[in-house]
Amino acid sequence: MTSQITEGKIPFSIPSSSEDCKTWYQIHGPHSSTTGTRPLLILHGGPGIPHNYLLPLTDLTRTHSIPIIFYDQIGCGRSTHIPSKKHSASFWTPDLFLHELDNLLTHLNIKDNYDLLGQSWGGMLGACHAIRQPSGLKNLIIANSPADMGSWLEAANRLRTQLPEEVQEVLTRCEREGKEGSEEYEKAMMAFYEKHVCRVVPMPGDLEESFRQLKEDDTVYSTMNGPSEFNVTGTLKTFDIRNNIHKIKVPTLLLNGRYDEAQDEVLEPFFREIDKVKWYRFAESSHLPQLEEREEFMRVVAQFLGYTKS
Image (cartoon, rainbow, N blue to C red):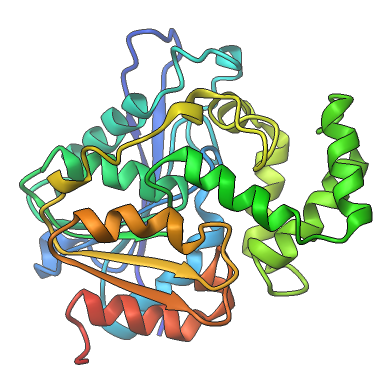
């Protein structure tokens, strides 16, 4: 069955930018205002990696008639790009994206009744949003996301030591020489990605497209994250919400994979501090179980949202 698709762009005013900014969105399925079915809003990762790799979530529209809303966060994908702000740490902050999320919820007229699924950076953003206790948020899904960047880096660098020695040598040398943008470094990083980001080979087309767009404009990723998964030098270097997680009061589902760069210790603070929480770890997945164990991922999410029985 082919689902109804609606898309558009929403004005987003940023006082510190002279750009006429717009947030692009796409709704799969009928708008919730016509059916009464609560929409699931998807927050992509990166930061700055557009929504394409999360498109398998439209399975939930086909199987359960859940309205799925994607959007590209400002600075990437089909939303307004602002390359003039590259390396502006004061501009690219989590608060910018929280304001954009609030703006989207208001313009789509769903702020009183919605669910959120955030993947990787998107889960960090979703958790920050939930900490503010918005009244319309009913359920939260945090997929493959850290509560603090320190534990993320510790896990990633531990997994790095398990790579072949020749791959580790290339990574270390290129980092020492400031050549993270080289083809040699990119090839070595792919050895890590194939083990701990997406274990599907060849890489699925939707993921390839997200990475292609990131390579075209890495303004957001390079400013907020930095040159690589192992070397976070940007705005998120000090990200740590562990002391505020207890403020998340909505039912929450945590997801990660056995081989995930978001290892168990990265998600553990969420499990410890959130009152209404469930945790599911995918046995054959790494960082992108919606691609690696697609059918099981949809089953787990649908069950959590109340569309199937346990």
